Length: 217
Image (cartoon, rainbow, N blue to C red; front, side):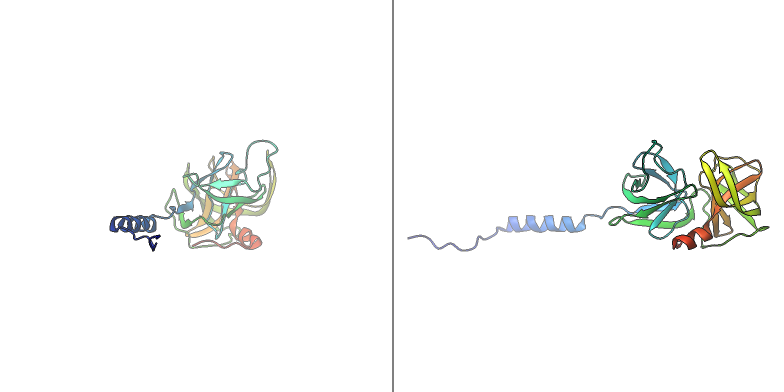
């Protein structure tokens, strides 16, 4: 006669081990968030390094040379990675004025509205008209202030012609590295280049308006 077979009883030791494993899994920390300040270095999948711009919601504002250097490579879709190597965004737009990358789903990015190398906290954005005094926060040259002397300038560089730039009278030399331009705690733009006492920057206010973007504050 076959013995009756009932459910297997778990030993106390086995139950305790299972509970310990479940508790360990529940306590495992989630992937660390990437922290982005203004000026934080990010890296493309093709290994180029770039400075993050003013923080905007769901996107990264990157300098126009933040594209793969290899000839013929389409930058659209190229991954933007954190210092730890995690893919945090992909390029969606590239021009001679700005590179825009959209944050990928499933990653946590903490945007801190502070200029990394000066500690300047950004509380908003503004347009700077002629005569307004603004400051360039250069990583190399320090804080350089002067008046805006021209708007909607067209500048011819080796990489091409760029329109819609503002000119500030600051006597200094680069490299500029996408240096922020501010008026106190307000974002004004990013430097694209300059020579002598003329420094040209991309105004942030029309860029935000035309792209439907908002500063992350």
